[in-house]
Length: 174
Image 1 (spheres, rainbow, N blue to C red):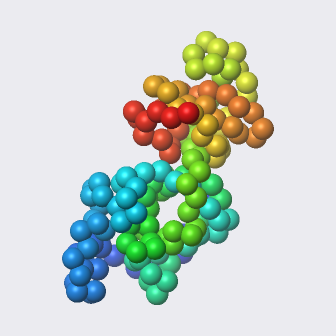
Image 2 (cartoon, rainbow, N blue to C red; image 1 turned 30 degrees about the vertical axis):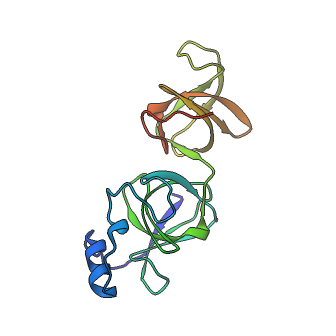
């Protein structure tokens, strides 16, 4: 599997309160569910891992323990909070932690969650272009209601949105 887990003690998800107490600050922008971000970008939002190896930490700083090590560049992740140069992310399996912003990339990728065909048009009966398997990470090129256009293994085609992780149900873009 592209993700390896390192043993570490698990801390409660109430990180925003713990940080505020530790640092003596009011950290409203750090808590999950807050639609504001320090960068002005929306929360939550999807991005991808920008390096071949990314440490997921238990807190927003290099002194916090490493909880996970991702070993797959372009894996989509969801940014759910920001603090300084650190981003709190969630992966497709629900793991949550902090990574430095320099290890993330704004280019959009999606993870294929079930076997399906890339199709020539966004229609269920369109001719197949290629077969994609669960676990494939593909570049997102466009999304319209119900369908997204991907590039995977040199093939471009459309796939039903519910076969992907890394794009919101009503999100559209070209």
